[in-house]
Length: 367
Image (cartoon, rainbow, N blue to C red; front, top):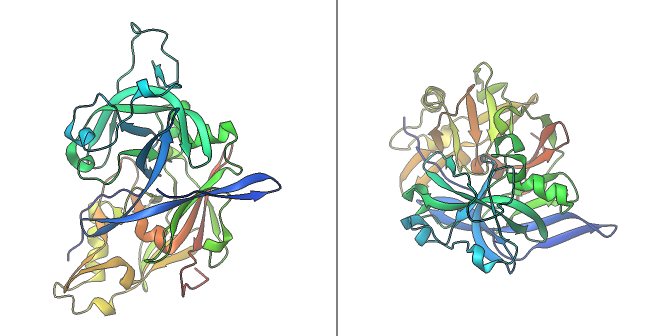
């Protein structure tokens, strides 16, 4: 039994497309660039901060809630290897005292130092308010100007920072939820965003606003989100391996664009890997069972050709062990988001996700 213990981020760059209905942009389509790190795909993109704009490559991460980029005064090796934000070069930058967005009146005021921990590292810094743009969608927002960050995972990363797209409850405050700020400013026509992760040769993109039907090979299944902790999570009814089912009480499936693989508690991942039974010599790789996740009464299937990675003649399962606080959670990363076009809908009181088979060449239209 062998599977990967990894943590990856998802990420944007290139031109932005606006789709309009009756004169108003219903969708803003932002292309995602693809790169390879440690043998795995990553997707990254560009945002701008300040006036005039300073550009940064960031992870669009539904598993975190804040925007952070290196400060020009940060001396950590990871900061020095990337682009940094210079508030002196922006006419609209303002120092902020607290996460609620209070503007600092003068140099003698006390400022909160914000510390943020990720699966493989951490960062800390002070807060700044400025104009932040994702393509044509712009808002006045509060973000972390990083003063210190760990080498892992930032030093060798192709991105400069992280842009959290979790539910607002995971942000340090409502003022630090960038998607919430975009909605409040009226920059996004519909209270939703979605990811299309393309095959090789296909374009990938983050879509702000109305999900695009061209990315769906069938009708979406909508499931209400359990907003506990700010995760985009839904009840996971069962995990299936062909005819064998695993039922883990009170398990949640978390849709995480900041993770590449499928993750979960060590005991659950070990049980799944054992049941899959991939041999070390990979001789049975073409005979493995289909992995399925039962959500909202529908089974969303991942074929063995999709959850087994090859490097020459060696193979491994694209599963990793990760333990989040609270009830058991199964992380559905890029591996799932490639097979299924997932849209994230943030209502005034409730939230939901839509899951449709992604419109790749040869995609089966039903789940």
